[in-house]
Image 1: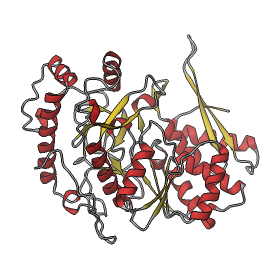
Image 2 (image 1 turned 60 degrees about the horizontal axis):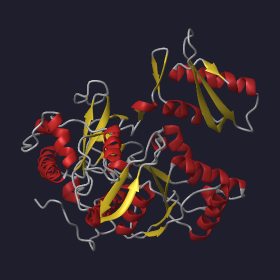
Image 3 (image 1 turned 180 degrees about the vertical axis):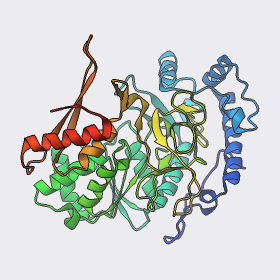
Image 4 (image 1 turned 135 degrees about the horizontal axis):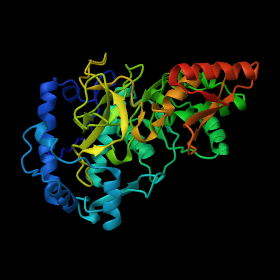
Length: 434
């Protein structure tokens, strides 16, 4: 097996093919496990030889990574967290000692937003960028994107790699690309004008931006379903596309179908979890590109099919700054049922349901904001925005208050308040409302 792989940049399947790479995407479980294990062995040996950080990290855990002969051997390696990366880059700026190529090999520099702490920096080599483009093209093909499509990338072009990944993948696939970006309200008004002129068939962004785009269009007298030409929208950066009511609202607003893509800057390709055009919701785990273990969120033992688990990711093709057993913090339910598309990957039937660190515990009950959003967006009286307020005063029991907008045409605010409160109590046990 060639490792790291190189790809023919001129390759493209016929437009009527279901698969970008039929053999890789339809392997039997045993074949794929053997292919994954071979890549894991190469990746761990390469990383051990080229990264002082990983050598030290693994030795401190008392693990010898020299021979990875089974997935059980691989699971002896310690789990890597975002805090580990931050501490390493603070001690060894700017990239940390897990940069495995000479600095002059770096082509692109990206990073996390830093909204929950100091940003994490990622150096990406030229050959890794080629592999990212290939992986994104392959996965976007499964979403239904084709060379005769035109894509508007309606997301901020910044250190966050999501928009860049969408752009390079769609370009590699051969689609026409309009890197529009996103920003202030005036920018969205211009987006409405551009979309009306160019009639793109696909959009990449976030679910919340798609809803904002639809609202802005209507305020300008434009019907996004009638006057636009979208047939596909694919999203990352937020969990909304896996929330049934949010997904339905987008699909009805634009008359298109929606594909959810998992998003994690550290694990680019950001579509390590990705829906396909046959899925009404949910995602595939493309674990021959990025290997995903699904672990119990508390014990970190392998999770059971059908139960909630946290994906733990390992790059199988990244050579510049690979992540090995990286704890995502996401929560998902998984199974091994075969999708209608014929791909044989493990599936996340509900997509990513939330994050461990987003979970709110009130009076012993676990509550996810995504569940509250699903309830609210499924109600016609909802006005589009909501806020959660947690009260943790000493000597009193914790309380959670949900504050939500009411649609302008909703009749009787008191009646709407009572209906919202009842639906939320039934779904998530929320007792206060305003």
